Length: 381
Image 1 (cartoon, rainbow, N blue to C red):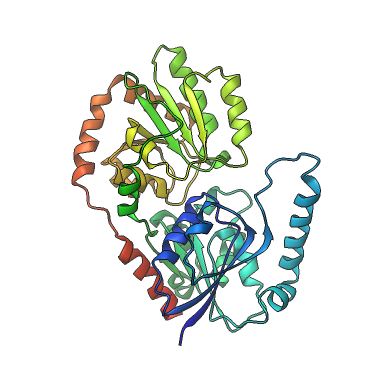
Image 2 (cartoon, rainbow, N blue to C red):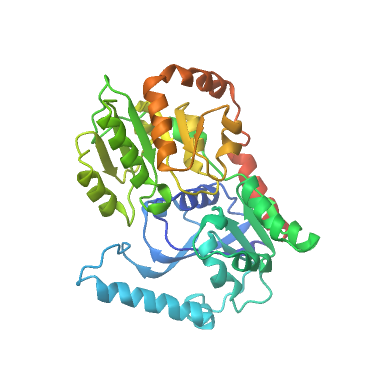
């Protein structure tokens, strides 16, 4: 008999958590599970990649509203009120939207859905959580709030640092045993194939080194710090190009900052693209400027493409880069980003050692094993 699973996530926009969830679903055996995927907002580039056998449901439809234009406010307010109402009175959601269906497992695909799953009226279902971030760095997540995750039957975490955070907060062996470290599913063959496509909408300057950074544009990713470091280096006469690929609610603010800094001719914000990998491949350096992460999947993508890597010292980075064997780990600050980029520009030969080690490195997981690791957890619940 198939296990019935309800998965909750906000949308399928272009974030790391959304990408790994869809990669997981694409590689999940349809003969073993019956999956309902409930989105708060039916939106995002990964919608088309969800397998046909997965039943996709939603609370609202349409693109995410990131502005406060007067004409958008009524729709935005309606969505907020409707979603809060269903969060406060989950019985309405389960009766009307889910038609009183019984699930074996209720699965929060990101930490933000902690309460939605814990407050489920289905007391008999097992509760599963997938945490992608170092919550000690996320605003509002006190030790008391993080401890609430122990109410779940299992909590999947994606780095040793996050696992240790939970183990330090656990007050019993039972709680400790709820925390399990997994590797995010990542399709390396797909990345390599997509990287062979042609670069569009951007002209690389072959005479100047290009730094690329890819991610959802919001404060966590530190693109403001990256632009300021770029500006400082340009002012010092160290000519180079900066390419930021991605979209998000902070896009207009970062774009405005780029203009205010006077670097519109040297820094480009490409916005969203279906396939960032050709840009990765053509660029000279990949730079991760994040303020915090969990286990930045984007670094594995850069490693798959054998890029010269510069990354702030956030959760997961030391683990992924073998404590600095496979890329340059920099201080988590604007100054750290500036120093890392300066080293790349003045002493590019120092990256040759990283390259040698990276090309001989075997990824600590493969897609099949990652999916199997997660299905083993689901099967034992």
